[in-house]
Image 1: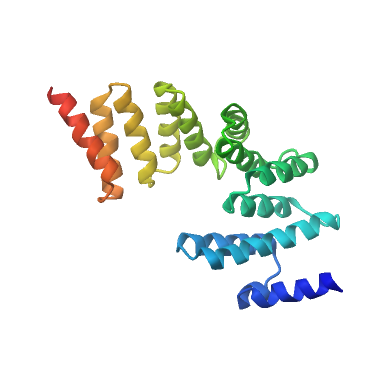
Image 2: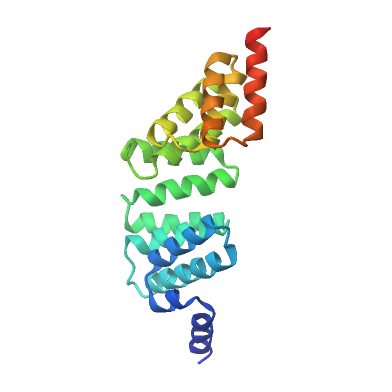
Length: 219
């Protein structure tokens, strides 16, 4: 009786569209769209619904691949990284070739500061599906790990690969420029800083980096 009451209460707190659509992945995608609009309260309502639907499917042995993906993706958006890993491991035991789980677990390990494990998951993802939908993101995280390790050449390769797959992210161009600058490759850094600024003319860090790199060329 209590469970039924809580389920009804949850439904009443959801936006009308979420009440009408009981698909976990749809709820995740709707939440993600709201998050991009900085409507986090509404987004979390959809993420919570995606989590509820997915876990119900799993507990009833009625889950499919999207059940685990919608669940782990929603948990990742709520910064619940340990749960991403726990559910991701469970999902991979059933769907060992579900590469979306591999990549999202790599992100979770990254944010838990386990960079060695994160790197293994990201490398596994790009090795198995080099043109996968999350390949650009996986390469970006690989670049971040190499940057933290001050392995600037490896970071350059990873960021460059990410950008070749998805060239319209100002942050990624900025990160590429920063490792090139750190490695003393100022001409290449200037080019990457300029690309970041073209995408985001108000990008203060990129503007400052461009000025520094130009000064280093002139000195």
